[in-house]
Length: 225
Image (cartoon, rainbow, N blue to C red; front, side):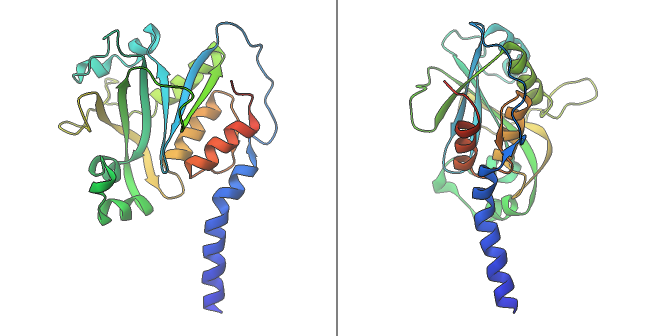
């Protein structure tokens, strides 16, 4: 009996991410906004386990993320075209810059409970046709709502300042910051990405812990470029 229950639990855990992609959230489409030439394009970037959101490095976005310059990044360099933002588990994010550096400890924390961090990277040109890149066009109002949702994910002190995690980065063009919320296997980096996209009026799967299911649901339930 115990073995059957264990097998049933494992089956549910394996199927749930796929099932979540087929059930849209919200269940019914929201009232659509009139599209115009002022649409703002973002990119959803996916690798096998993680998703990020790339924001265009326009003047208003550079102002919103002006604290990056305080952290030593060349935010106002004309070569910067995108500001890439993601949320994730602190220990796994900070200790696994490459797959070759994967350790059991961070993996265990990622499967249980961990504090969260924000990761921000400056990038130049990104090929929107490349594998793992999903372009999304948003109305100005939807774009603003999404940026607001990203902004409030940064933990701030009483003066409203973000908290840079000193001495930790993958390279010269990225930084880590303290974030709001706790990371776990059920509410991870990809569910954060989905929640932020829903703030912009997009529909995703009901539960998308995997990048593949999140991207599929975006393509299935929304009109994308």
